[in-house]
Length: 214
Image (cartoon, rainbow, N blue to C red):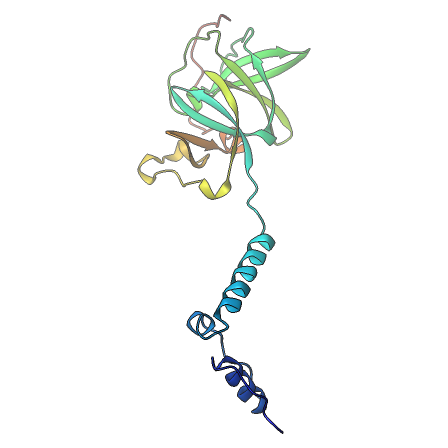
């Protein structure tokens, strides 16, 4: 068989030799691709392949969270769990209720249990004011209210930006923290709503006294 004339670069020579010997084409390294008189075409091919790979790669989808304020810190609840955010009306204490349970309130004719997120996170309860809100969340098929100091806004967070909580700040009561996401200069602590509702069986009772709406 007459061998055709080949370019001086040697790339086609190597491919032909490999083919004639029944082997696979040699690996094309970056050094080999970008050498010889055809390197401009090789560079264009590489850029086209890179562009195609980037277009085919699935783009990261952001997650939507509701940012709330508790004791001066920012926490976030997954929007899929939040049914609505309510202004605080009357909250009636329940005798012998667990400490995090602030009481019950009426919501369009139904009774809603309200958990004080401050107490659940280990802080002292605070008086209600005009900024106080109840986030009605869905947990295991139940609607439960989470009392927060204020509701901030809805944010979209990329999963790749989520960081684990610092090990020195973890405790048994913080096992429901999914991670930390930095919003500009402010860290947002991501909460697992279902775990928030799992209370320790420590026998604590709710604080005494009634509650006045602002």
